Every structure is written in structure tokens, then in C-alpha cells.
Image 1 (cartoon, rainbow, N blue to C red):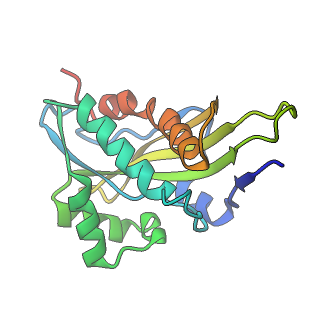
Image 2: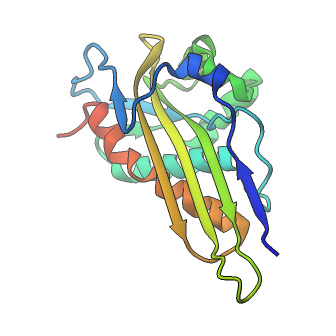
Length: 203
């Protein structure tokens, strides 16, 4: 018997925040974005329009933020300072951070000030579809299908200055938790060079 978990949230309220999205990457360049100054960047828990269930103890919203922090830290060595996730999480806990605060520019600015970040990277998981496959002989394969939006919030300007949309689809074995993690990782990885380039941090 197939075990399926599907999450495709409605977008009516959230589109007011995101504006009109086009396929691929949309950019709104920020004034002074080309500065050679090393930026400090923090990654916020990803946003979902309704809470996601835990995948065997893995919370997709937190995993996405943790994974992107690690990817960006390794790729940006010497070019940017990435605030450790534990620092962001402590600040979120102190502020009583809620899922919907990722939509509120005032709360984002307060969080950036709290952790000393010039920019915050915020994300929205728009689809998370995990299928662990069927019984032997059915032909169903374990799959992971993920769509997400990654945005850059500039604290000084108090607004979103850039965004990227990504999708990843993969076939591989494993538990529901592993499928969710692999799918999110594959969707997040292409955003790392985009983030570095958009922040104007290339040497």
C-alpha cells in the first residue's frame, strides 16, 4: 500500500507578500548592493502557510534553514559571514517568533538587529510531496517533489530585495524523513551561488 504525504498550500494571502512571481529568478537590486564589504547574513526558519507534520522527528521548516546555513557557510568562506543557526534560533525564541513573522518586515528587521545581520535569508516551502512507494511489484518508486521560494531581506531598507524560485524532483530510496531532506537539499543547493552573486560578494 502506498504511503503518501502531500502538502500543497493555498497561496492567496501569501501572494500579497511575495508580489507577482515569474518563473525562475526575479531580482529587485538594492542600492549599494555591489559593495565589497563583507556582509553578515542570517537564515530564518522557512515559512509554510500551514504547519507541516514532523517527518519522523525532522521538521522541514527548520531542516531547510539548517541545511541552507551549512551550504552558504561552506561556499561563502572568506566572502561573507553567516550567523550560526543557534544564534538565530536563540533570538527567535527570545522574540517569541512565530511562523507568520516571516511575512512581517518589522519583525524581520527586529530579528536582523538582534543577531547583527545585514540581510536575512527567508524561505517559503510552497510544495512538499513525498511518496515512499508501494508494495513489491507495483512499480511505484519512492519520490520527493519540492518547490520553494528563497528571498533576501535587507535590514537597512526594510524590504525584500531579491528572490529565487526552485524545484527539485528526485527518485531514490529511504524513509519519509530522508526523502524530505534529500528533496529540500536538492532544491536549496542551486540558491547558494545565486545568493552569493546577488549579494555582490564575488571577488
